[in-house]
Image 1 (cartoon, helix red, strand yellow):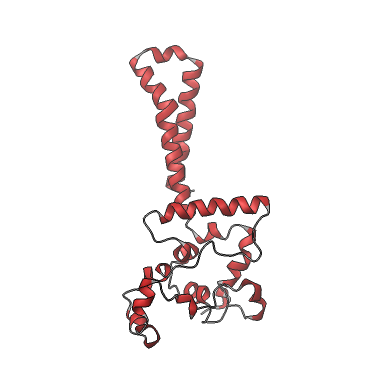
Image 2 (cartoon, one colour):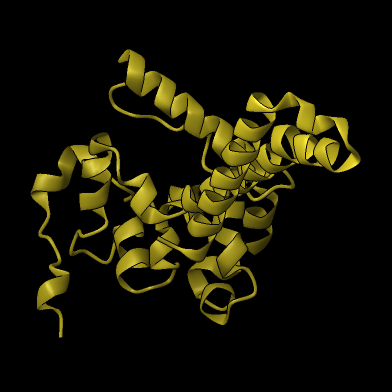
Length: 205
């Protein structure tokens, strides 16, 4: 349990205690102090708990553990362990080119002003389809993969901009007229995982 979780728990208990007092002794709200306590019990503390819980969940939902906690995501977890440098997610994950604790979020977030909110809306859609059994088979992206997800990390990097294969296409890649995944097209490939060896982090030296 983190400090944030503990704080939310304390606030929730305090709110419940005050609500119980106001409900059982409504006459207590007759005084100024009672009205302040009633306001805190019915509005301020519950609002803080809801806001704090939303922020806590928002941050937790960015973690790799959260993304892969659904049993349906097991093939995608396995794809991070493919022992082949051509595999885009595996190469990034195993070589720490992205934060390991936010591996999914780093590549799949929408790098726009309200991208984080859009991510959460799509997350709710994922839950909806999972509950009602309407997940597409195979799973498909809602929209074409944007270069900005790659350029958020790679743009400005020497290993990216000075590489001969990239240099002549830099403008096209920035403008989105050429897609990164046209060349880097081995992504998760969950339907073909059995064809490739796995990397075992436990045996790494």
